[in-house]
Length: 101
Image (tube, rainbow, N blue to C red; front, side, top):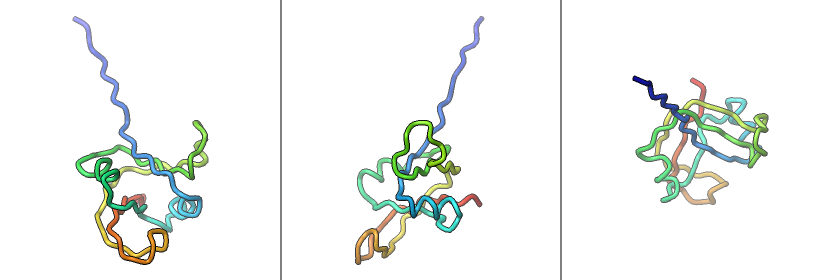
């Protein structure tokens, strides 16, 4: 009787961000990354579970790990914020938790 080998791929959420935010996340200054609550992000976050979050400085070439920060998946919250990136009005966002603690 033979054995069947099952290889589980890591479930990874990829988050490209601007350099300023990448540096803040890497230093621990920015514990969450925000994404507007849209159908696109609802499909990727709600009811889903990941193993890791890969925060990328822009869109690095394959294999360029100097521009990728790997964090454990710690879930997200839906919150309302006002931030210059999203304009002057308060918006609902997913706050994707990236802190190492």
